[in-house]
View 1: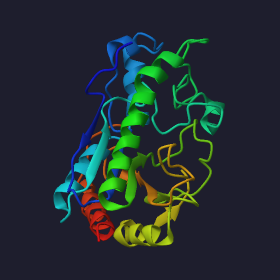
View 2 (view 1 turned 60 degrees about the vertical axis):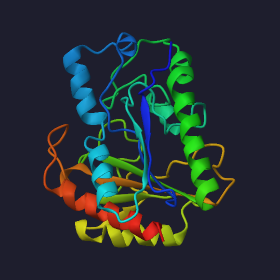
View 3 (view 1 turned 180 degrees about the vertical axis):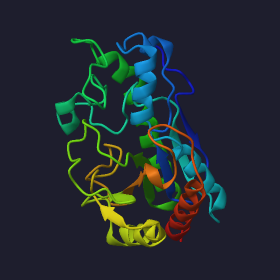
Length: 265
């Protein structure tokens, strides 16, 4: 299985910007070779993509970059998370394995079969997951070398109503959920985000989704790498489950631009 050269993009920002907007789940693209290993028919697959894709988050990030005084870097996944999910652990550390959603999903958001029993995830992990991780690790390393720090801002969205796959779907579902890490999310970063997104009806912390993404090379080891996950409830900017974006997108992009600006100082 050969690695497609356009499966992700690192879009350059300002040389002195430490910020990387990471957009891992915005794409619906599935290569034909990967589609062949998915058991859903086309209609069911489109429905699953509606539910699992963080639709329009790449647009939010792009608009934020255009609006911020200092251009942040962007790392954007060009493939669906149904190919591989770059934000999962690729081994037994991943809690989502309990619902068939490790680095390579075996089940859908509604707990149906996505891939046949016994399907080997390793070719997909080798082809896509590790290559993506290596590139993201290099991008963070470049920001550290250039600015002495790196700030990874994950840009996600989540459905208004919980889906069956959610392990923590019983928690609160605020308009903006901020995912944090005890080691990599300093109080000032969280405070900047709470201020930037204060105008959307409330922010919450680590509910219904917790944590944030840091490349494993730096995870738990290097506090020069700070990170925060922004989970945007989809009814604030789009028609669910997989419909068009609405006017809320512009306001969210402006808020994200404000956060980028605060972090660029």
